[in-house]
Length: 313
Image 1: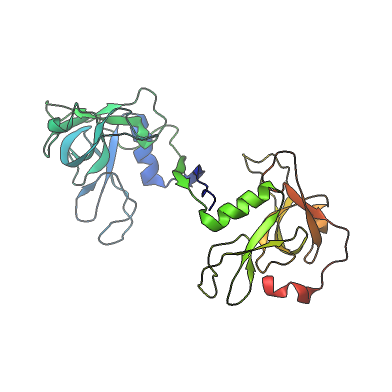
Image 2: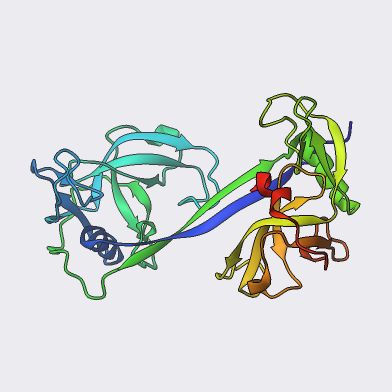
C-alpha cells in the first residue's frame, strides 16, 4: 500500500468589522492608555464593555473609566507560547478584575514562573510602545504591589476615534487526505484522473472519498475517468484573491468528467468569461511540473445535452 500523504496546511483570512460607539471608545481609550468599561442596568461596571446588557438585553452606553491595576481572579500557565500570542516566553493566561470593574478581562501575565502566580495576585497593565487602538495595545499584565492607580478623568471622548478593526483569523494544522485521495493526488502527477466505484450503487466518485456517500460502504475499485468533461454549473468571480495571479473576472465551474458520477470544480480558461455555459465540453490544460490541471478549456465539441448531466447539478 502506498504511503498516505500529509502536509502542513494554513487557513488564513482577515476578518474586518466596524465598531459601535462603545467598542470604539474602549479601543480608542487603549490607544490613549485609558481603560473604559460600561455601566450595566444593575449598576455593575463591565470590562471589557459590551453594547447590550447581558441580563436585560437593553442597550447600554454609559462609559466608566477603571484603573489599569487589578487582581487576578483565575489563571492558567502557558508553557509553550504559540505564534501570534502576546509573549514569546512562557506566561500565564489570567482573568483580571481591574480596580473599579465588576467583571474580569482576559490577557497575558508576564511572570517568572507558575509559582509566582495565584488567585489574588495584584497586577497592572504594561502598555505597548506603539498603540493603534486594539486589544494588543495592552502588551500584557505584570506583577504590581502598589496601590490602585489613579484615573485620568476621561469621559470617553477622543479625537480621531477608532472606527473599525481587522483581525487575522488563522488555523495551522497537518492535513492528511487519506488512502483514497492519496491515490487520486498521485494519479494527477501522471496527468490521469482516478476515482473509485461504489460496489453497491456502482457510482464513480471523483475525487474519491474512500466510501460511498449514498450507500455508506467502503470503495476501493479504482476507475480512470476523463480527461474531458462537461460544465454542469459555474460562477463568475469578480473579486481578485491576493494569493492567486489570475485577473478578474474569471469563471469557476463544476465539471463532470466523462465516466464520473460526481462533479469536481476547476477554473475555465481559453474562452471569454461571458461565453461559458452549462453543457460546455472542456478538457484539462497542464503546465510543466504541475501536479494538477491549471484550468480547463473548451474542446470544440458540441455542447452536451442537458439530460446527460442534469443528475450531477
